[in-house]
Length: 439
Image (cartoon, rainbow, N blue to C red; front, side):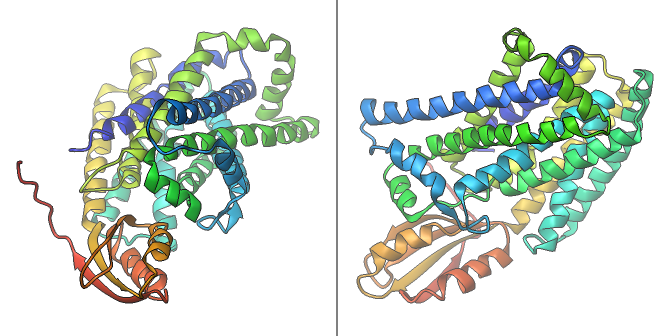
């Protein structure tokens, strides 16, 4: 692990791991809808303000290329070619409501009706769902490492179900059908979040700005998440009103009625230390950490998204350990040691899978005369291309490619690059190993 930015991903997941411990007592007095409403409403505005401040600092206190606030907000109407060519504002709606708000609603409902340990099953189920999704759309193949990875997760889930259901029964809230349903919806929603959160595409104009000032990405990411939070909250309001007027009484109906009843005490709730922790240490800081890591990622090995997918199991593992330490969650120590061992071994297996399938190559392109400026920005938008360099000599353009599978690599070559009229020839050089020599 030569990339120091990995620490950012680990810290972010550890901070998210504290959430179940923090809300354990909070839910005894405050509606989960109120917690979600305040957490994402305030965090959304704070992230937006931070984005504006960073742009002003960049423009006035540094020598970096200027960033236009107007252009950043205009980008909301840009079409996202990696998400059904929808406008970014629509993409943020799907991400915010289905990926974040619904995910957190059913995550909190599972926590409140079962136990922390049982709820963590949802995270592991989502990893399996994503694996089968990626297999279904041919993003990844099931090699021996992938199969072992899923088998280990299944064993871990079985142990967590046994311990979690036992602990829930001892606490007087045995796992019922409603808790299982909440868990399944939560795992589906968080799977959707993990799948779509990186389905973001830069326009040609944005790529020009990124080439001139890499720091553009940070306010861009902050605005993405702030609008996802705020739009998600806006969409949540009609949902809870519909559920509230339905004649069927559910756990969610009770939470919604409590939410309306507690509105007069909203500032008192906002001042509770649990709410402050959730907003600052479980939302704002973790997202800043992962955005900074994404922008500054430099690694000869795996990409940011690959390391992020490997390390996201730290969140449920942290939650289990923190719950045992801080709230005396039921978990026999011998089984806890087994769970930790299984999850750590799962990290190793997942890392081996990603490294085995990683394709690192250099492409040398010969172009038609006068097309280099036009084609270099267009190419740089393609997934897997990490950098481009203009050349003088027998070739005109060098592309660094780092992509997760050989299938994706040849899709990039045959579907994206070869059909371009500006490209006359492509020479492929696969990188086997990078050796750094001391200076």
